[in-house]
Each structure stands twice: as structure tokens, then as C-alpha cells.
Amino acid sequence: MRTDFVAREVFTGLRRNVTMTIAMVLTTAISLGLVGTGLLAVRTIDRTEQLYSDRVEVQVALTSDVSAADTDCAQAVCTALRSKLEALPQVESVRYENQQQAYERYLQLFKGQALADLVRPQSLPSTLRVRLNDQETGAQAVRQATTGQVGVRNVIDQREVVARLFDFLGGVRDVTFGLAVVQAIAALLLISNTVQVSAFTRRTEVGVMRLVGATRWYTQLPFLIEAVVTGVVGALIAVGGLVVGKFLFIDQLLSGIVSNGVVPPVEVADIIWVSPILVMIGAAIASVTGYATLRLYVRL
Amino acid sequence: MPGVGRVAVSSPVVIRLEHVTKLYKTSTRPALDGVSVTIDRGEFVFLIGPSGSGKSTFLRLLLREDVPTKGDIYVSDLNVAKLPRRRVPRLRQRIGCVFQDFRLLTNKTVGGNVAFALEVIGKSQSTVRKVVPEVLDLVGLAGKADRMPHELSGGEQQRVAIARAFVNRPLVLLADEPTGNLDPDTSQDIMLLLERINRTGTTVLMATHDHSIVDSMRRRVVELDMGQVVRDESRGVYGVGR
Image (cartoon, rainbow over all chains, first blue to last red; front, side, top):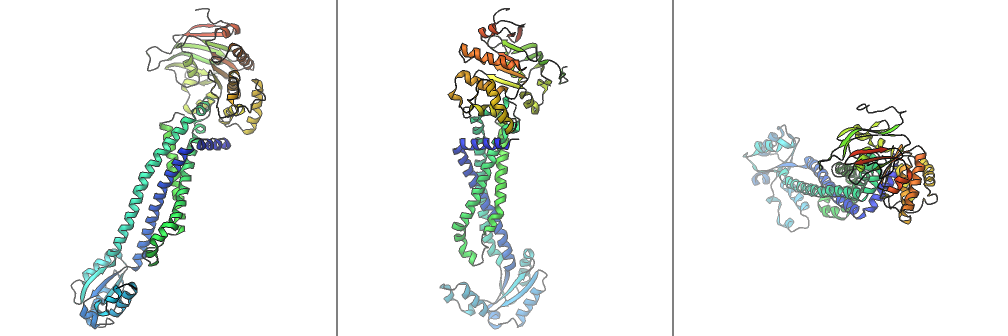
């Protein structure tokens, strides 16, 4: 196999169809950029889930009379509830937060906002904050153990609040993957078309190659490599786009919730993790499409 | 040896057609009808006949551009009709082809066109550098390696095509109307060149309509009509014998 010859043929082919080549590279880049965004969303969702599984608690809010009377969960109603909760196998720990502590946390949370001035310590309930070691069944067990008990106002599962965030992130992921699929179909058709056009513009060369006894590989390889090169270049542009997108767009968009610790930041390392996947997808799609096109539509 | 796929390597026979019939789906009359022809190593053979007589089909079958409906075809030791697809390149490396329309690559130089035939079958750069000037010298184009095809006359372009066909030293050179686009003097030069190549031991099979060339050369003539061999004559002329 003469690699210099094949390389020369590939270069000539790419240069000859330069507008088609650019279209193919850009379409592939957009498609893979969307796939990359989807993969980053999945990664962020996973990390966020992990973040919350460590932090999320079930809060058992106590009635106002118990809240007002008991500052350190020393009275019978509260201690009974606490022991009952601690006896559950799904429960890791139970912490008591009295009205004053709740008020301080509230002030910190809504610092600088008008809401902070409206609330007094006595308007907030004391809570038993339950940390679970089994997120799946724990919340239900806590609910069963406390609902209707004396001194219990209501039970708040923080996961229900967080679920909305996950729904949003999941939606972002689904939309980007959906767009990526549509764009991938466009890229696929463009690759197929470009290979056909490329083969057509070089029909004399290919005719001569066949006549003088070039093997199938020799006649087909330049076309295949052309497709793979554009696929890989498209993937690299997509990676570049993700890096630029991170600094110009994602970082700013998420800056508030990242600094509050609501979601973990998208790191350059995440993009580095995504890059080889995108390059492999780009190369695989291009080579499979190129090969199928040569076998089905081009007589070489 | 039909069906065996090989003839003895030492045999002087280079091309053998045994009762070859080719029927195209679009036609009721066979393009070739029970044709049997044997051509020895080093022969110079004219294939003549009116348009539609089967000359092109004959050449296409030898190149395995198509397969016969019936019969066997041998080129050297290869059973062409039964050759697996992956071995077709090996057959074509033994056959050089020249056409009426030259089929040169317009974006490559004269030398590039000839080198191309070697590069695509994986010959090394050193072989290409050595062999291309030699063959350009043989066809009378020494010093024109860097010219582009459009800078050459028709006769010179056909010489490039012949150089490309011959550069890999094929056993057989198939020429399909190689003088069809050339004036009589230039045609004569091309025939002298083909004769010269024939003298190196390469079998030449040339399909032509050119009476004067066939008559002046007095070589073996195989005449086809309606897909059948109607004349096979050594030292024949174009129009006699029908």
C-alpha cells in the first residue's frame, strides 16, 4: 500500500470538492456538538444526583406549640418522635433544628431580599431533619412513621423539590439528543452525497485504476479516508465549540446556581472526557456511511 | 481444461475462448455466439467487423468487465469467467488497454499519467522513477514527462496512453480503435509503435475499422459478424474473404 499516493488522492479529493467538504464538516460538527452537549448534560445530571443524595434530607416539621416550647428536643413529644425515627433502618441520622436556628438559616438564604424582613423566628417551625441511607424507600418510611403523630405539622421530602431540577436537566438532555439525531441524519446524507459526488468527479481516475488492476481497497480507500477525515475534523470543531460554549455561555448561564452549589460546574475536564467519544462517533459514522455508499451506490 | 481454471504456464497460448456466448438481457440476438479463438504469445491480431458485430463484447469479456453467458475464457493461466472478484485485479495487471479517446487524466502530467498506473497497484516510488522515463523513451516521448496532456497532439496523447498501458509490461495489449481519432500519418506512427511493443513479446489484440492499416500490416485477422467468427486468417487483409 502506497500511503503517500493514498494521502495525495485524499487531499486532491477534499480540495476538489471544497464547498461540499466544508458543508459536511460543519454539519458533522453541529451534530456532534449537540451530542457532546447531551453527554455533558448526562454527566452533570449524574453529578448533581450524587451531590444531592449526600445532602437531601426529609424534614419533619413540628407544630407551632411544640416548636415554641422546645428549643433542644428535650420534651416528651419531640424525643418520642426522634427515637421512633432513629429506630428506622433507612435512617442515618436525625438532627433537630429549633426556631432560632431555622430563622438564622432563613436569613442567610434570603439575605438582602425583602422576604428576610417579613419573617420572625416564631413563624418558622422547628424541624427534625432526617438524613437517609436509603434514598429510595427512606422518605416513605419516615412519612409513614410520622404522619398523624402528635406534634407533627407536615413532612417535606426535599427530593420532590430537587426532582423538578432533574426534570429540567433531563429535558435539556433529551432535546439536545433529539436535535443531535436530526442533525446526524443530515450529516449522514451529506456524507453519502459527498462520497457519490467525489466518486463521480473522479470517475476517469477510478476507471483507469480499475483497468490497470488496482484492488478494490486502492480504489475505495481514498473516498473512505476523505469521509473519515471530515468526520474527525467535524468532531474536533465540535470539541472546540464545546470549550468556547463553556466559557462564553454555560459558565455565565449557570454561574448563579453553580456558586450556590445547586449544580456542579461544567469543567474543561468534562469536555476532555467527551472529546474522544465525539471523535470516535464522528469517525465511525463517516466510515460506515462512506463504506455503505460505496457498496450500494458507487460502482468502483 | 475447462472448469479447472488453469492452463499450463509454459503454453504459448495467451488468450483462449472456448464456445463463448454472450447474451444481453436487452437483446434477443447474442452479442457473441459460440466464439472459439486461440491467440498465442507474441501474436499481433486485428479484430475486425462492422459495428455491433461483437468486437467490444469480446474485449470486455477478456477484461472481465462482463462474464460470458456460456463458454470459457482463458488469459494466460487464469480462467477469466470463473475468476473470483478479488482476483480480477490480478488479471487486469496482465492486460494493458488503449482506447480511441485516450482516457488520460487531464490534471496530471504525462509522467504523472504513466506513473499513476504503477502507483495504484502499489509499485514503489523507486520503481516508478526508474520505469516511467524508460517507457516514455520507448514511445518517443522522452523529455515530455512534465507536459500536460492538453499541450500534446492527438498522436502524442495516444502515445501517453500506450505508455501507461505498457508500463507494467503486460502479457497482452488490447487496443480498441486506437487510431480512430487520428489522421492517417499519425495512425501509421501509432501502428509502428504497437509493432515495436509487439516485438518485445507482448501480444497485441487490436479492434479496428481502419482498412488501410489492416491491409498494410498483413497480420492475423479475426473477423466477427453477428457475434460469430466468420474469418480467422493469418496475414489477412480487411475486406477479402467474406
